[in-house]
Amino acid sequence: MVEQTKKRFITSDDLKKHNQPGDLWISIQGKVYDVSHWVKSHPGGEAAILNLAGQDVTD
Image 1 (tube, rainbow, N blue to C red):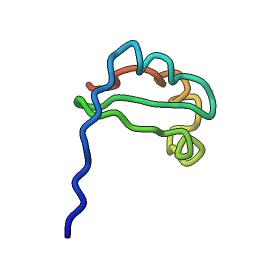
Image 2: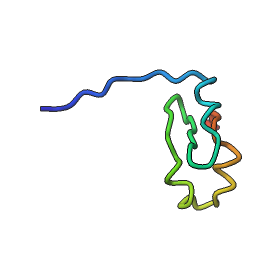
Image 3: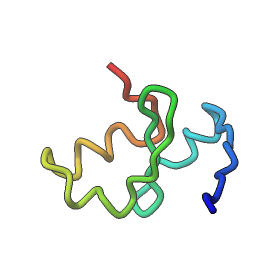
């Protein structure tokens, strides 16, 4: 049996609240990702994520 996931809609105001170390979200092409635990593994360094957290980073 496949478990269905319920879509949750995040507003831009909600996204903006998640921009502090330990609580980092980014949006890419309409999907929101919690990158709080991944930030230390980012190939470009933590600063790249910290500067963009709480935003839509779609090119």
